[in-house]
Image 1 (cartoon, helix red, strand yellow):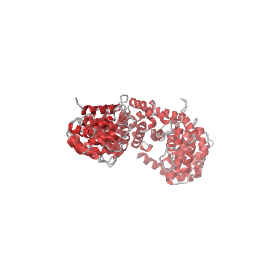
Image 2 (cartoon, one colour):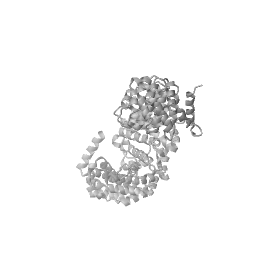
Image 3 (tube, rainbow, N blue to C red):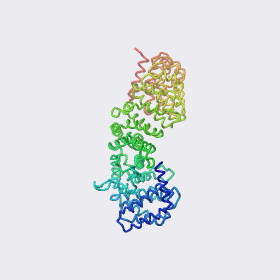
Image 4 (cartoon, helix red, strand yellow):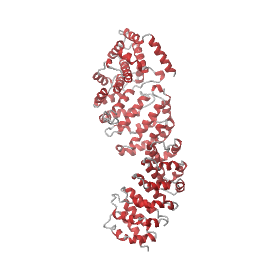
Length: 637
């Protein structure tokens, strides 16, 4: 507020003495002076500050012949700093003109010449190319015809080679650093630079890669993505990211643009950039960007200079989106193991969890999306689940109320997947999951309007019943068994599939829930004819589990035709995986323990059916094994 008040006061003082003409007079009086005259630099810097902080001045700039003459003179001089300053003024003026719907033709920009200058200066006078990039960014916003021209130019690999040159800093130790050059152009921002040297280039790249001009505005421009994947440019970007530090020539705004560009290009199948981004040094740097000291520094960066909480949210979101890419795009499939090991080495699980302390709620889904996919990819070499548990990651579910009904379906699905996988991995995680006390949210979610949520709840119930009957009493008490039974009749195929899995495991470990599972029998019999192969297999397995521990449900299975339909699955199921047939045979073996079931199967000519699944007619070893098991139970010695 103090700086805002100060700027307003300065602006009023300037207005009182005809500041534009006065500045032009000072600049013109120096025409015979040395190229880098301090007075000329000061005039241009004042113009930069005024055009940036007071957009309403754009009309005066565009209509002032004397100021336009100053810009023309600065652009024609040999001093790269003055040229860069003139382009910055043009950029801020165009930005304001876009907001104020003003004509910019008085700037007399020769677009062809501008691109030539961008190319010529990219290697030696990068400050000029950086400022030209700023003009292109704001012009891109101003007029679609200009935007199309810019895209057309960058569709050629030539300009990406220029950009590669731009990112390779070949300066000697005696030369001015890029940061010092930018300070000469923009001022030092009271010790906190307003603009980073490379900001405008990354902003331009971000706009280029999303330059879809057809109906699909989110379409990635394949030409731009392909050029970004060229070896020279891709290496330059990878090297730039890997070498990021507090001394880098980039502001929070530029970093956000860089990360957004990298994400969008890496998600395109036409670009080779992704193969270079997911290397050890780059992954390590992405992890560093999530560390607390980095996020605190960004949060302390003034909001007026594009820092603060908004910048923290954006940076964390973009980093997490990039880190999630290998687990959502098939193009990374071959590299997934090596990428996972680098994630472990870079402590991605830990820094992701730590970053949640510094972001607003809208950023949390990006973290959960990454965490759930990493935990789903846990194995001996990549112990993501253990890292998550050791870091007490499970506590974030309650802390941020991640299973609240008002949350997005995508977030809820990721949370359910995460818990489900922890349950699937080991029964040692059962007590930890129980302590979450998520039974009531599960009861709400199993009735969710989104079938994706309903199916994930059923899958979770199946997995918390996978290793033992630990959860049986709680599931019964919270009425989740009856809810899972209802899902066996759900219109959604995935929900039906996982509901069969849930009720099947609810009957696996003991007979405690058999009486409550009784209403499910006719539903499971119908599901033996479901179009989904996996659903038929799960239904067959569930019916077998219902007699695994006692004959309490045998009469119901006989009454509802379960035995007949299981045998029909064995005889006629056309599933390519043979899974329904194998599991039906195994379940029939369970049923043949009981005399009442044996006699029914005998009347159904089960022996004749099994004769068809002997060698040489059948070569499936599991089918042969389960068929032989049934015969042994039919003819006990």
